[in-house]
Length: 563
Image (cartoon, rainbow, N blue to C red; front, side, top):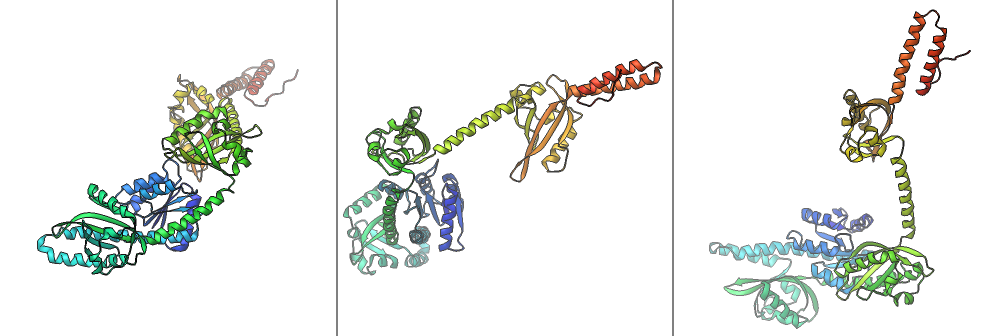
């Protein structure tokens, strides 16, 4: 199983496809953040982890460090993935944290396949190593009554281990070496007992360094160094050493893994990095190197001249703060101070002056400063996007003002009838302040006699059932008075689900009052017709009143009056 961690979904998709080409049917899990990646690694225990170096919030170094702290994940081979040229300091840091190698985007199929083969071989060896060491420690501690059986099992495990296992005295004399140890070093089982392993280090000082660590901590784990085999040919090995008692003597248990293939893959990576350096010269975005202490750029690619109009020489002889818009200088200084504290720039925007006097918006991503204050940064021109965003903000501001000052009440609620948005007119309609309205709901504002059927229609609308989109109901104002309302309501859809409703609400109390008065006048008119002989003049008067009231209610005249 492979775990891929990258904050870009497209990168995860393309990398998954490449791996599937090499290992059809393999299982791949992905994470879009370092935190999620750690969670999946702890729960899934993948065989290999491929980790993007540059991610927001928690970069690849931080994720690697956390994974190597955990017992469940520290043994998993981890390949770091980067979209830029890997500096020597970054490589040393990554390998020191426990990564086995680096891959540079765009990924070369051959390099990827080679590194995956090495990683799988390391994982297999690590798994076997952990299993063997656990069983070996149990074997060493067996009770005396089980000595013969334990020795038999111990011997079987050692001889069949896929990693080199040896037991040596503190002076380097070999007491025991299994078949794999002999194969790696090139010596026979008899020859190796005459060899002092301290003499096989390519760099003699490494032997002293290892002994110093063991003297302090009692063990060395997954240390990588170069050695000579019997034929004086150099090979790379990852080894772990632990102090043990052997035949009542202080001794070292040594586990050796041949990682020469992996190191050769890293050489291929260096070649790819050299090619990447040439590629940087033609990318459209700015790529630069700066000294955070002096405030000068020290290197930049040709894209800077294309975007800002300055030549590289003109740009490098002045402090970069002089090119930055005055309003953005303090925020830029703040970001540089963060870099000097070891915090990389995930995303930062500021304005740079062009040679023609205009300004352009640049979006930056940069490394944290190293001990010498050196940072590596990349920027893209986002001027067009910023102009579009500003135009959008202005439009949103105008529309918001229009909605807030609209003559009708506007309400958006959720599935339970709780308010998620309302304008000032809505609060004023019910006599509440904006803050008071935030604590209300449909149930609290609808008249008790109407609330059940109003909520019924709300629930049916949420369930996408056919129901009235426009209806009248009574509301209760803060002072307890009844207000007659008319509402135009529609469902709010997100994806394929209805998550709430949108309502436009009008106060129709005056209209309802006019209708009631009209009804009374109509009744008076009919009664007058029946009871009065000489009613003509009264009839005209009443008809006129009826027409006036119908006009106020927005209705057409009922009577034509002549004379």
